[in-house]
Length: 203
Image (cartoon, rainbow, N blue to C red; front, side):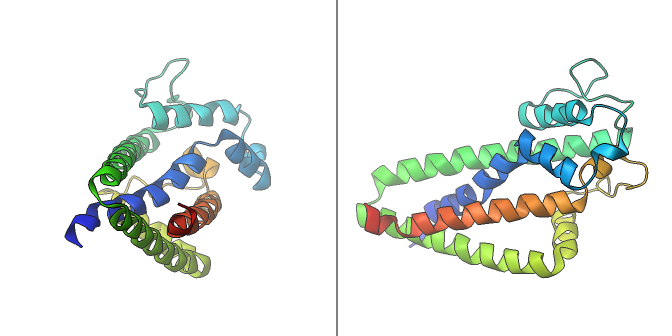
């Protein structure tokens, strides 16, 4: 059982992190959300352009500088820019975890016997499914608490406590958008988990 733990954890991480990664960088999704929540009407600037710079930074790790292709100082204040650096670190960790998890699954496919490998995938998929259901129910009834707890766990400062009256980052990304991202991510994770659980029947 011990030798199955790495692949079970790897499956869990892939099923959770890949959907989050997919929807976190979907420009079209954000543009649709900006229209849905009336965010465009709150700005005179081209916020699509400004926000796309944020996505490029989080995805590619460009340094935050005050020039044409970087995140502008006159749009995001120092606190917001520092928080984005913290978020960028989380995305780097996410990329590393996805890479290591996929590598672990790939290697395990050769190291473990077929039955052991498929059984490990099944357990990983089932564990993910249970986690998704629990997180989904908590979020559905009290997303505020889930949102706050997430930030308390993954950030060691209070830079994420932004002012919705003055800070453009939180105006662009109200809590409702994060809830919509979570819903889409959990749904895709749920579907992928079901596929993984039933791989034994497919292969």
